[in-house]
Length: 82
Image 1 (spheres, rainbow, N blue to C red):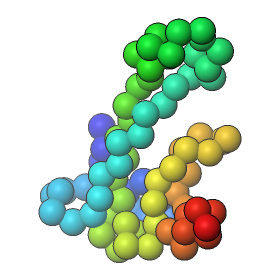
Image 2 (cartoon, rainbow, N blue to C red):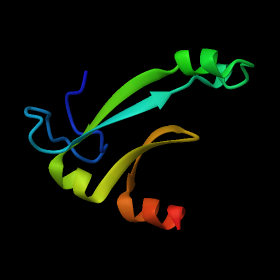
Image 3 (cartoon, rainbow, N blue to C red):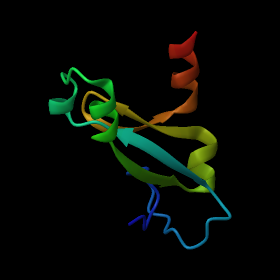
Image 4 (tube, one colour):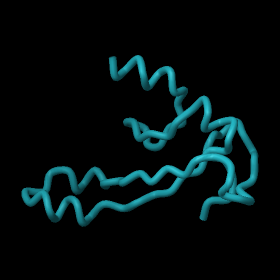
């Protein structure tokens, strides 16, 4: 259950959904990556929910990387896309 901001350096509790942003990220276990049938791999995924408070969501986003879930600055995301 979501109870606080996903930013590890922020301890803002989730009280109301009026402020901030909820992220829905689909996670596929590493063992499912090599399945032959794409439908089976898709159904094996799991949706995880993360919340960033208002101030953190203005500056940051939630993503998956090699180590798992990461909270990164939005400007880093824009640079990677360019």
